[in-house]
Image (cartoon, rainbow, N blue to C red):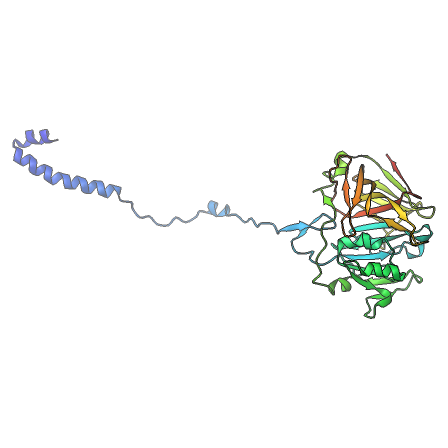
Length: 356
């Protein structure tokens, strides 16, 4: 550039002056080009507005401890309620038995059976008929904690139950109106308990711990994954009691019968269960004519879910221990989410038949 200027102007001093004048202009132009220009805030277009997220995170959930189903977090803070339920013909159909989370069927005197049923995920207004306690009930009910309701019993058995880590609500001692006799059934098969009222009296009692392992679905349960197809489960406690369960695809559950007759709930529908557990148990005769089911120890079992059955071993170490179920490889069995019936079938007088 200097040489061109010198030719045009024919003199060096002139060229120097021109360069001195041009350089600041060039620098100013360069600085001006580099400086960012302020711009107005862009407004979102209609299309951009349409893509604004409206996603709302789902509410937190947790497992119902006695059913394995998903419930809203914190909705099941209340304790469980165990009730001793009559199974005499005059007591059927029982009130709210279909709403129990877990039902144990046990042998009592005369070859009859009774239930120790536990409610927690769904506490009904009334439960019954309520009957007296038996010597195995403390071992069955203690792991659940919470409350137990019964009509009374021999002093030795009542004392055993009252020493267990549960709140005892007893018809014979109640003066608050929690229990009463209903019409339509004859005594002693007509005692009921106000279940929701009873549970509401103990808001500070802890909810039960989870008793069994649960799969996320029926299809993922141990029986369905590793078991064999079984359509009917026949059990026999004695010559007086032989309950059975039949897998029903339409109901996606096992339907219950007793002594060859449909076993109905208080709404007239057939009683059903998602899981059926059969435990072979010993019977102690230490209390004379009152048999005691032995549930501390171990023995053979079968677990049925989704129309399939897996062979198992049950074990319970202590008075307050939960029952553990493992398969033939020692792996913990996972039930399906839903209710569970547990048949405590005597090894001495009972039998189990699985029909494919």
